Amino acid sequence: MAIIHRTTLTPTKLELLTVWLPGRPWYRGGAGEPRLARAGGFRLDDPEGEVGIEFMVATDTAGPEPVHYLAPLTYRGAPLDGAEHSLIGTTEHGVLGTRWVYDGCHDPVLVTELLALFEGRAQAQAQSLTDTPDHEIARSYTGSAPLPPAPAAPCAEDNKNNEDATDATSIAVAPGLTLRLHRVLRPAPDAVADRPEGALGHVAGHWDLPDGDRARAVFAVLHGG
Image (cartoon, one colour):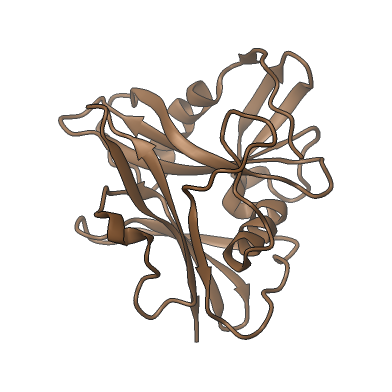
């Protein structure tokens, strides 16, 4: 069970993302830096209790229209071997000391626990409360075989699609099995909680819009074949 500490982070998560996001191929902002606010998301527990796992929705209001990004993050007490390319930065935690913050698509602990969430073996947790399930997170898995743990070094590739499609990161989790995490989220009707056609599974989540309304979208999809 992850314990949520009421303490300081220097720099903050949003400050780290403000520097990191403009370098991503799916970044939708202009030449200036993003103006980010945390809008929602959820957490997963690491069974070993070593790695913090968070799926943060950050909204950028710097442009003419808000843009909503999904940032899968992991927090570690030491560097992750071979993952220098996915390091977002380091931060000083008021209780835990130095924390290495990674793009979680490249962290085997996050990918393994996300696959467990698809199957219902893991429970989504509230973003800012200790030991509090988030029952608004929808999940499904229709495959007949148990999902494997993530590779030791997940191969995550960013996919830049046309402007009418969701930009995403694809992760090959096993032969013939691909996990796709949407990086740019677009509010959709409540029916988005249903599994997308042709997918083996999905995870759908929620966040708050700048106008105070509540939004939902598919965060991650599992594809086979």
